[in-house]
Length: 274
Image 1 (cartoon, rainbow, N blue to C red):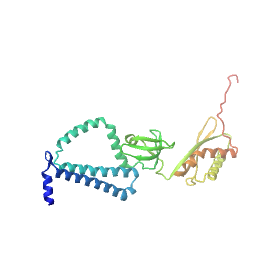
Image 2 (image 1 turned 135 degrees about the vertical axis):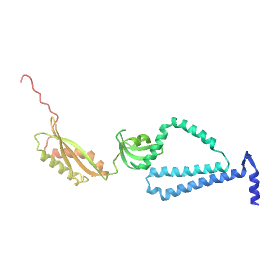
Image 3 (image 1 turned 90 degrees about the horizontal axis):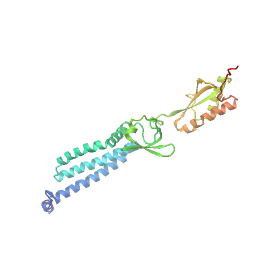
Image 4 (image 1 turned 180 degrees about the vertical axis):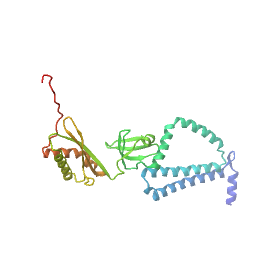
């Protein structure tokens, strides 16, 4: 009974050699392909995606899903006896034309793949792109572009080609960071005493500053009006907002307490009559 029914479907031609049976088989192949693609995507998200960066997992998931759909489509066309050679030749010519017209799109796509493989930064990292003057938190590395949430709350979309070819400074990979500030003291002040009071003030009022390595002081320049000192302190990376913005205030407060002068710019003018 079933065989006779299938035989009757194979004899019912729709267009040319396309029969109801072949169309039914093609539909089953496509439906099966969609189901398999969804199951594969679900299994990937359940067992493998949690161990991968978020943006990498999203892109691999898309590749798996659409890859299975493409294979299913090729199986569908094969079941219908469709000759794809002519379509492939036309598609090749069309691809060349489109390639010239969309070089930047292809470049962004390839750069996105390289970013996923190399992983110079991952979702949630704080980064800086000095070439573009952009710094903030990396939200996503997509197929064609990446998104960075800047410190002012705005989100900047960056084409992957520019992102991949730019210098990327990661502020997250290292567990510690360094804050620095410059201050000047008068020539009449005792420099050793000034260094001591600044160091003590830092250690007493900035508990998140590391003692190893300890705060470092470098006499950078004997300026026109002051002895200029550069101060470096190390701190856990997450305490940057508690270190860099207040370091200069801490140095100023230490010098004020000890009565050490921070001089204004001065000029000595000699008169020709003298």
